[in-house]
Structures are given as C-alpha cells and as structure tokens.
Amino acid sequence: TTEQGCRFWIDRGIDFLICQNDFALLAAAEKALCQAMRAAAKKTQKHMLKSKILGMSAFTFFLSLATVAALTTASVFVKPLWYKALPCFVTVAVLYLSANANKYSYLLGAANSVLYTVVYVVNGLYGGAVSGFLQGVMLQAAIFVKWSLSPGVKKKPVIKFLGKRNEAVVWAAMLGLWAAAYFVLRTLNGSNALLDALGFSLGIASFFMTIRAYAETWHIGMASYALQVVLWSVRIAADIRELPLLIISVYGLIKSVEGLLSWRKIRREQQSITASVHVPDTADERANE
Image (cartoon, rainbow, N blue to C red; front, side, top):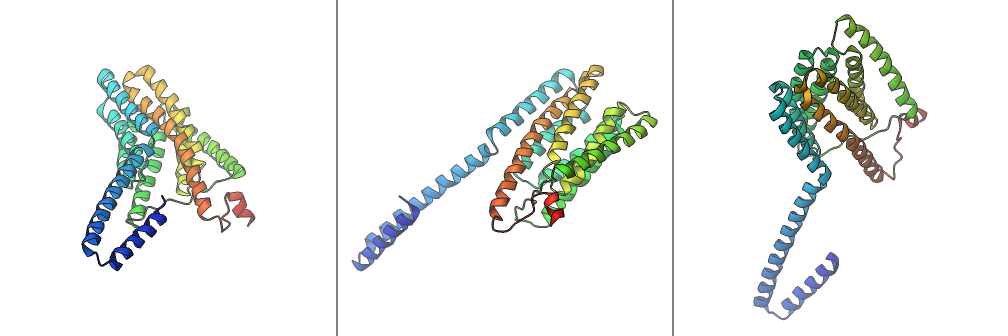
C-alpha cells in the first residue's frame, strides 16, 4: 500500500519474468506499468491544480468574486469617473495574483498606484498621493525588479517580528510624522487634512517596514485601510460616485487581516526549516545578541 512497498514487488516481478525468459509478458507488463504511471501522474496533476485553485482558499476566491460583483454594480448605478473605478478593479487582480506569489502582481500594482496617485491629487488628498506613490509605485517596482533578478526561484523574504518595544517606537514616530504632515497639509489647504495626514504617516511607516519584511507591517495595513474606509465614507456623503473606492478599501482591510495570518504561517514554516540553527526572531533578540 506504500510507494516503497509497490516498488519492491514491481522489481521482484520484473526479476521473475527475466529469470523465466518471458520477454513478451515482460513487455506487456512494462506497457501496463507505464499506462498506470501516466494515469497516476495525471490524477496527481489534477489534484494539485484543484489544490492550487482552492488552496488560494475558497474564501479568497469568493471574496475577490464578490468584490468584483460589488464594483461592477456600483459602476453601473453610480457611474463613477473612469480613473477612479479602474484602479479598484485592477487592485482586485493585483491581490489575486499576489496570493500565488506572482511577480507580475507587483509590476501591475506599481502601474495601478500611478492611477491611485492621480485620484488622490484630484480629490486634494496630497498626503495620500505622496504615500501612495512611495508605498505603491516605488516599493512594488523594487520588489518586481528584485524577483526578476532570480528567475525561476520562488523565494520568500525571511519574515521577522519587530517586537513590542520597537513597534511602540515606530508608532510614536509615526504619530510625530502625522502631526508634522497635518501642519503642512493644513497650510496647503488640503482636503480632509487630518485624515489625509494620518494616511500619509501610515503609508510611510508601512513602506519601510515592508522593505524589511516585518510582520507588524500588516498592523499598519489594517489601520491604513480602516482609515480609508472612514475617509471614503466621508467623501461619499458629498459624492456617491466615490463608492467603488469605499468597496475596495473594505476589501483591502479584510485582505490585511488575511495577510497577517499568512505571514505568521510563513514565519512558522521558516522556523521549522531552520530549527537546528537559532535565528533571532525579534529586533529585541537581535540587539541582545
């Protein structure tokens, strides 16, 4: 019933037929064995394909499908401006591809972030435009280039944890940046300066933490998307055509929670591979060493 047991009896059977000089039966047995192996390989490939489709998780698949349906419905009834609706649809595709670690998701994401930057500028959200350009265009383009330099190798970054003490320092620095950005945006008469400045500071913090592959970047991601939900809800009160941006913000918030769980899982897998070698898990441990 095991692969090793099957191989043992197949080898014994071939030895027996050779000893009996029954080459006709040996040829027939080899032909039947090849057919069985092809059938088994086909069944295995089919199972792997099914696992790949569903393993992206049925939740992810149906969430993406529901988001596209909601965006399509909103586009039909509220008729948003095309340059506001298009990046929302592209975002669903980007996150769908990134679930399979497809490097082109980052190239598509970088191009899509240019459209988002235009949306923020048109709405007078200058802080969001700057952080969207830095976090979206520069970061994703850098990841695409890095992955392209090692073709055929499905590498994942070594996930690290910042540690509670260092994460507290990051949040404190981010709040200071928020205050400074609010002062600048208010001077420029930006729209929703308070929320826009917060989005800017969250985006900058997320940019540097993602570059370093810290899992806590998803805490910032959740805060950022939650902020966007509030921001676009406020904008919808003035213009219902902003509805697609609210829908994609809710989608991003859910995906941020999923991303945090996924990075924790990857970290556990990496720890199991390097179990024989002590790898400092947090910034605090690395400082102590």
